[in-house]
Image (cartoon, rainbow, N blue to C red; front, side, top):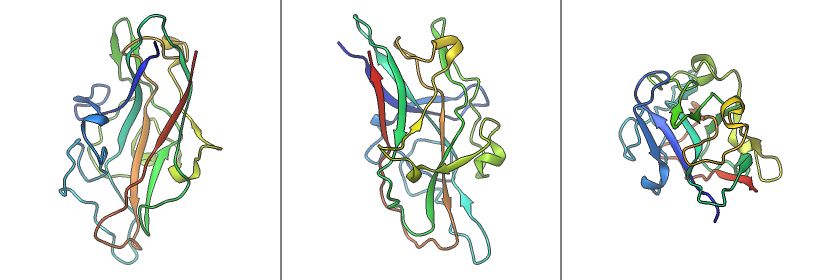
Length: 200
């Protein structure tokens, strides 16, 4: 049998100790909403404001996602070579983009418990490169496609750069929505993010 994998994200709590580990399948569709709040609620509250002329961009609170192994029955499967990508076409609307951090803050499972050493609570709408200590550069997720995906790291020292136990995860992938003063109300379009990985 193969491993059962889900996509989750952490939010709330404090740095290195999130309050909630959220399986996004339990939310949707839609399964994620970028907004001016650090929660999993899919609603019309806490909308990102369109900047006035000469201002912006404005930012959502960031979201810290990861691939999670729900179960790995014998004979165990090894997950490696994790990739993430889009369809390459930004359908969110004029002046709106979804940025992804190009560094992967540390998250792992060790000795029967998760460790969130790279987690930084999203408590404001500042730009993630300036605010998140684990992110030093970012790019539009729409730069990454199935033929040129973004490689996502798995913590090496504790997990050996693979996922092969229930509870193990990739490191964090940090996302943030940017809204410029050219954006048009009222709402953005829906977009999809895709994952791939090798199983052995």
